[in-house]
Picture 1 (spheres, helix red, strand yellow):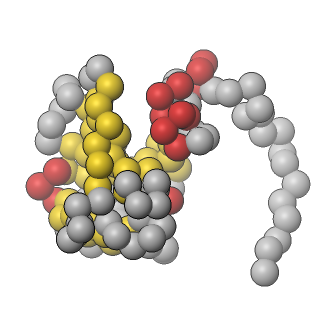
Picture 2 (cartoon, rainbow, N blue to C red; picture 1 turned 60 degrees about the vertical axis):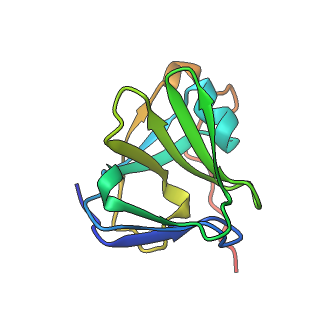
Length: 131
């Protein structure tokens, strides 16, 4: 656990949040649900529900429920923000890309790699700097 006292938001800023407790290191989930929710794999941290304060003054945070889980997103800009399992109502996963940097987090493992899309093979890809 690391990176206490972090903040984040959706792309348009309508939904913002603060985490006052510890954040779990990042895991990448390649399951079909997460791929379809994010458009790729879900890179997520997690925190205790009691440690997450969401600011949503215009009611843009929307939850989409599937059997066993729910996904939270901004209905204005479509940003994927949260995931929670019905089996553990005390925890919420947070899409790592919505956290303000520096996060102080590291990616530590990948889940459901058997469901990774066929394009996700990374044999030492070249990097391109951007400005």
